[in-house]
Image 1: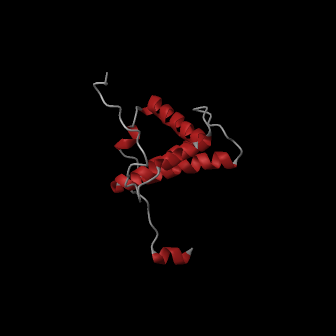
Image 2 (image 1 turned 90 degrees about the vertical axis):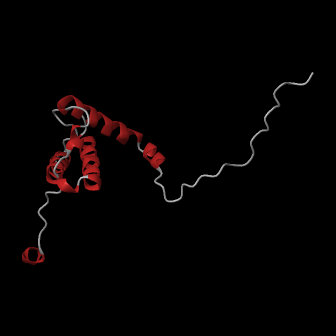
Image 3 (image 1 turned 180 degrees about the vertical axis):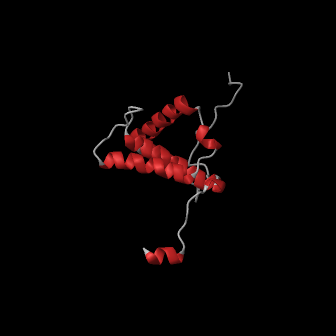
Length: 123
């Protein structure tokens, strides 16, 4: 007796994908500890400010100031942020994520004071 449904043929080869020039987001998996650390910093921010509060917009210099504070603590040999209990490096990376997103999507938040040619030549 013959089966009602024919047996499908086993696929051969590989399907086509047009991914040239697209970002390889899977590369983020190569730094799982950093991804978890950034996520923990985001979770801390969620408790302190509400989830995605930063997406309302943050001035570039406020983000940079926060990055500088965490960098300074790392340079002083302090690895852990007292308030959150998380590594300063994770807060720094989280702020870098904020800055990157703001620069990509919120040019209205750019409050940097850019020096002019005459100011730079005096330095």
